[in-house]
Image 1 (cartoon, rainbow, N blue to C red):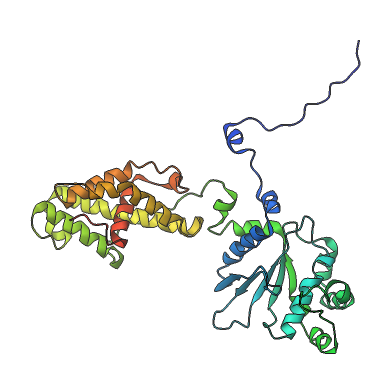
Image 2 (image 1 turned 90 degrees about the vertical axis):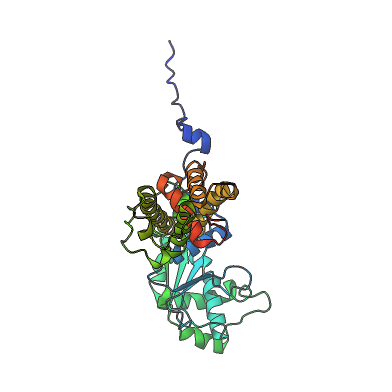
Length: 358
């Protein structure tokens, strides 16, 4: 009789439909460690842009000639001498003191040359964070300064620029001695991800279900200025149908069908406007305009077709919009039927060539 104990089977993911199609999900903290240097700078730019309460302007400088600045942010456009620097370091380990000397050297050198003013804050952004040694050192500004001086020849002298050696002479040393080294710090990667979650870029980058959509507001009794163009085209369609001028909604109050259609159209428009705002808060810039273009591409041949009058053309276009297969767009899970009609009115509001009366 054998006493052999069977080895445990290796743990494997269950073959659910989602994992077979896309593979097991990758957590955001693991995903950011797979980025290239360029992708890491783009992620940092998105994160910093999300800090809108702090900054009026955020720019990416990364690449050749950035002089040690990757993502820079200004609290006030009127004073560009006050700025924060987010230095991106995409390494496969927590940052060590040896990883940052050349970056500090660049800052000292280029501020001494007058290329740019000394920043208000200088934070390292790394997917593995910073190691214990560096974390402790960043909390001791005077020791950090002294360690930079000691490491200058080995880490900075020949690496700040490829054009020349940067010698720590008396002038540069005096400049270094007068700088505030308490500006240096770092942002932990989990905090980066948590704050990035509040930006419009999070779901496009990491996936996941969009949040619940807020309720759409009811149209005000008096049309807003932003409604005037599509409502004018709507009233022209009614006039084309009735064969007389329609100057305002008062002129159709005796027609139950048109009165109901007028009210429904305004509800649809406000629903689509709420969807636009939702998209602006949760998805990258241009996502909603892409949806509008998809609707336009799907209905323009219907709009060009022959119809008895402008009202009938409008009805046909809206019906076509409500039947479009829009399954590829990220907003579809939060798209109401009335939004599709509202997008048609938005297109009429924003595009000269979208009109119901020929």
